[in-house]
Length: 96
Image (cartoon, rainbow, N blue to C red; front, side, top):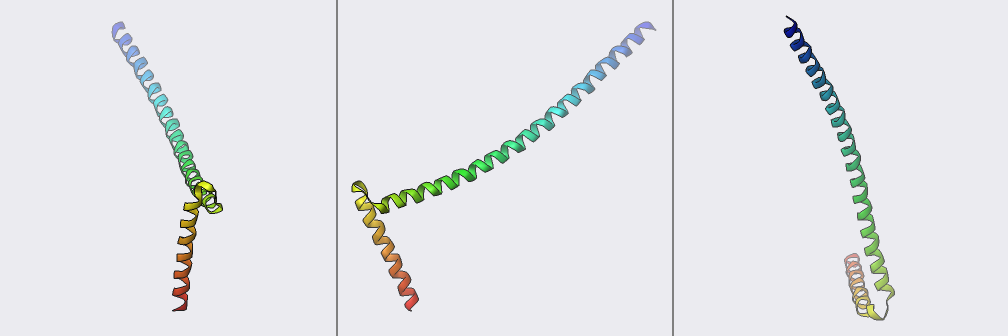
């Protein structure tokens, strides 16, 4: 009879340890999910910031080429001609 009691105590101990392990794993899972959500939020914010910075960089490049410089004269002339054509097209559309 004593052996059966020991086996039952041993099983109860193991089951208790399993329940504790399950609780720990559930806690870790919840913590990991919240970290994942936080990381996804940071990634989204960084993606927005990257898009804004790319747009700003392109604007600065265009402004720099429009300001001109010895190395950018050809690009500047091309951009100015393109802008003039666009303006002419708009004026033509308005006059029709």
